[in-house]
Picture (spheres, rainbow, N blue to C red):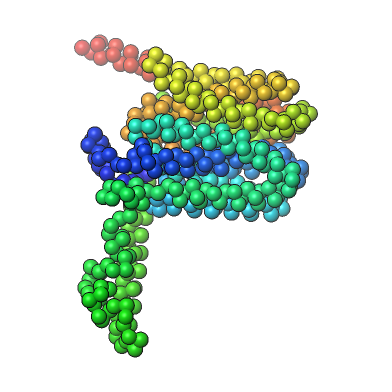
Length: 507
């Protein structure tokens, strides 16, 4: 999906037809690749885990600002939605700057968003500091974590992605406990300030995402371009139009480092000209790189218009628009639902969102293993998990005890493990050559769902003073999305049969 010069090892051939003749890179599927998995794992903990624990802060914001639940929920949904929605656009940064720099900058922006939010005077201030700023920073750090795992793995790519994404479950459990403790001990403002400091670890994770080397030196995974090293090394010679003016070798007495203090103004001016030429040359290279990155990004997404002629893929997009909100809404509103049911004491012992997170971790592994069995269809596992999640969403409003809610939350956590199957299902729909672009579009649709779902549930509560109807409506919309997935294959089969019949009639 992203073809940054910095991040892709030169062992790979440009022509997809030559993939069978790739040279084995020493860090592919081994070595530093597992450090990249570890880095991606912690990125999922710090970003996705903290976002799934925002229900703790949502309760604090309701008490602090006394705004409607629909308006307050926009803060969390903006952060979660923007993280996913900006995914296709973050690809432009990756193509231009590389995964490592993009992730480090994202960590800084995300931390800044948390810290600025600690000084919020109203909910609208949080829209920009936390929703937009922290959300955009999260997107800049999250996407490189996913992309780099795919670049470092070939044979074990599914295993590596599965291990890294389990950080979401671990992070939800850990961040829920951490934020509850920090809010209780220091207040929500200091809690956000401390969380901003914790988020700086995203820069460390980004630093671990070092690009694959060109393959010339297996012991140097940093992968610097030899031409760049030559241009900036102290003993290098300039090969520019200025000829020997830029030489700094020991035999060059005129321009060497030991030039006398009283050097002539002509020589000083010559050095300034050389320096200016170097700056212009660097600026020219940067301009070319930005233009190439934009061209690759544009052709990658807007050149994939053929995807939208695939009606099954379009149905899959509709499913993604409705599905993710049913998974996000419980994380944002369950802490307040627990307070409304007077179950805070039991929930403090073991939060319901932590139950979803823990079961979600094991579900990804279990559903992945089951789907890999030769006698079982991935699509069947995917659809059964979706039906289970829809059923859980419909039953959740009927439970008013902690034990009942815990069982439903466990079902939500297990059925939501289908997220690990989404890349496989997407590949079945569009083929491996369009997988990257198609999956980016699906993630963007999930982001829109996460953006609109929690505020919608809050508005329904403001009107009806119950969360029940929001779960019922979201469940119905989710069911419509699943029906799109079921109806499209039937329509395609009917059209194919009709085409065969018409062809036979013409013959």
